[in-house]
Length: 226
Image (cartoon, rainbow, N blue to C red; front, side, top):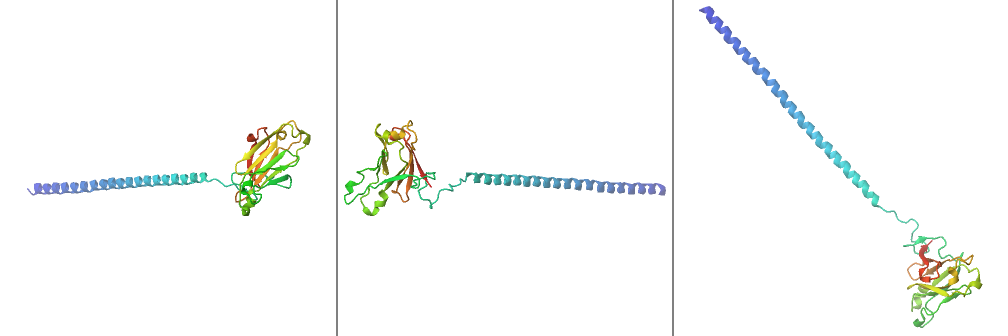
């Protein structure tokens, strides 16, 4: 009986040891799985940071594009120039008495404002006449009414007075008449480019005229400065 009792005790103790060992081994794999789950979360956060970085790059590109809309100003145009340069082209010969002859007219002649703009001033023997179109009755503002024509002499005076006259008027500024011979391309040596200065505005303005047509209303005219 003792022998049987001892065998039963040995079998009972061995069974308890196996159960305890199996329980310990199943705990470790559970911990490993939990750790992998946490690592996966960190990778997801890293992806979000990369997206934010891409958005920042896009924003900086937009800032660069906005600077392309800045337009530089005309470096030649300034308040220190002799003539008004707004909407004008640069011309070194603009209304220069150094290389051109001149004839001038003012629309105010005395005490009677009715005389304003009534007469032309002619360039003797050149087939050219100019008249101020700025009407001013106040003698204190006489300087504003002056207009000056800058021209080079006609090369062959015998060709003048044969074809008639035509005219160009810039309303409120000046009225120019010229012999059609000025636009005759068969006459050699004619310098058809001339200038007119006006004092009407705050600063004198200069206009370049090219007498390139027998119809004065169609001549080439451009505001210029120097």
